[in-house]
Length: 353
Image (cartoon, rainbow, N blue to C red; front, side, top):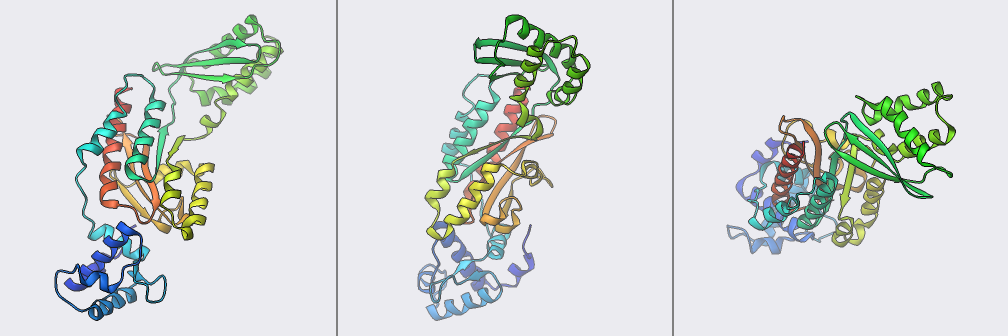
């Protein structure tokens, strides 16, 4: 992921300062940076012509690019990578940013999903980008399953895990449900479920129903199938990907970026390659930055992703949090925010077992 660190060493002090100021100005404004603008901010007094020559040299090295003729320079993907790896100054996390993340933990409710939703919303609001939170897959063995009738066309399936985790799902029961069919369906599942995870239960359920077809009536069979179908997507996935703040990307996009942003939206909507999202965090427990095409999940949109895994008390990676947006992210501010958020989520998961 890293650029060529030797390239930075080969730049003299003037070239390095021009390069740094072009990138910093671009990250702040999103606009190409011209030589006249730079001459007013450099530490040494040089002419605009001298600065132009330096910028041409940096362009030759592949660090800067000219989007339009004589319109100033912007950093290339290589230039941004070199800046992030060698010149980026990380800011301290402000008390205000820290408080807004901590406030998401203010509730004592044992609702992990709700807390992760709040964390995603706070992360998006703080960074003005779209936030991604990969919730861990819940794989504890099942302790108990129950069916509760709410009305003629609505019922609830309640799943209690061995670790005390409780989840409910609404579903549409088959016509003609009765209290006895609900009881029979629950008894059948509880006999099979003990010591098994939801995924394991679903994998054997079909053959068990076939094997005991004489013991269980058709209505109870349909209840079992429709009730457990409400968990179908979550069993196959490695976790739930929570996306917040898509509108932030549209607000920050220039007209030329809109097609790329729509491409990104399509990727997020399909939530493809969720397991690969977690793979991006491999190779360490710190924050990682993926710029443009380095980001294998969203490379078509040319976006940047700042991502960090979160871990439980045993240092096992459970999921990940991140921020995605245009390559013009405020990396120096966003990296410590993502890092702190990952620590907070890790503590949450450890506290909630």
